[in-house]
Amino acid sequence: MKVLSVILLAVVLFLGVVAARPNEVLDFETDNVSHEQHGVPGQAVHGEYEAKDAHGNWYEVKYVADHLGFRLV
Image (cartoon, rainbow, N blue to C red; front, side, top):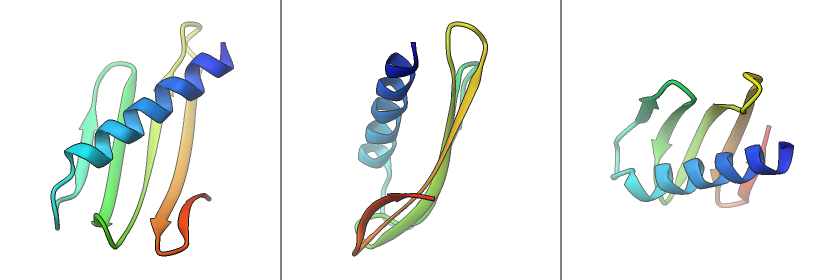
């Protein structure tokens, strides 16, 4: 189940990065997923996302993406 949660979080992150426009802050929330991102896409961003698995457990990931790559914090 954790693998499914990690895949879901990766998909959410990818969609968030694709949907972000320059100088926009990504911020959306549903019943099972939320994602918040600050910065300038393509240069440096930081953010966090959360997702709820089928058992109701929430998982949170904080990250930085910049000239050094994508890093969990």
